[in-house]
Image 1: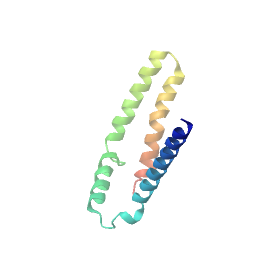
Image 2 (image 1 turned 90 degrees about the horizontal axis):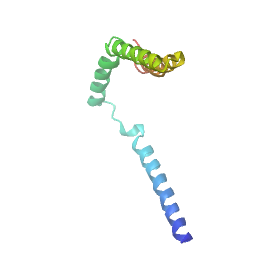
Image 3 (image 1 turned 90 degrees about the vertical axis):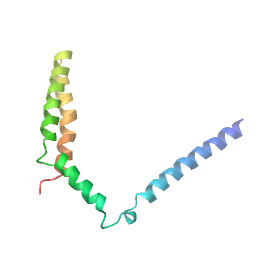
Image 4 (image 1 turned 45 degrees about the horizontal axis):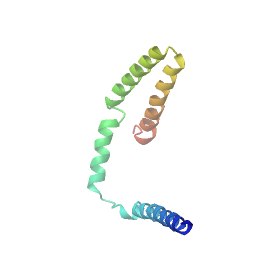
Amino acid sequence: MKVSKKIAAIKDVFFKCSCVISVTLLSHPAFSAEGDVVKDFMQQSLKGIFGSDAGFWKMFILADIALATVAGLKSKNPMVFVGVFMTALVPGFLVKRYVFPAA
C-alpha cells in the first residue's frame, strides 16, 4: 500500500513538472511572430477600451466609489470604505499607468 502511494506521488510530481516545462517552453518569445497582425489589432483594441482616453476608467472609478460607499454604510465602519476603494483603485491605477502609459 505504501509503495502504491509513493508511485502515485511520483507520478503527480512528474505530471506537475511536465506541465510547468510545457508552459514555459510554449510561452517562449521565439514562438511569437514579429509581424503578428492579431497582436497589433488586439493592442489597438485594448488601448481603445482601457487606454488613458477611454470612458472605461470613469465608469470603473464611479462604480468603485459607489461600491465602497455602500459597503461602508452597510458595515458602519469607515475602514471598509477605504479598503474597498483602495482594493479596486490601486490595481486600476497601476494597470492604467504601467500597461497603457500615455504616449
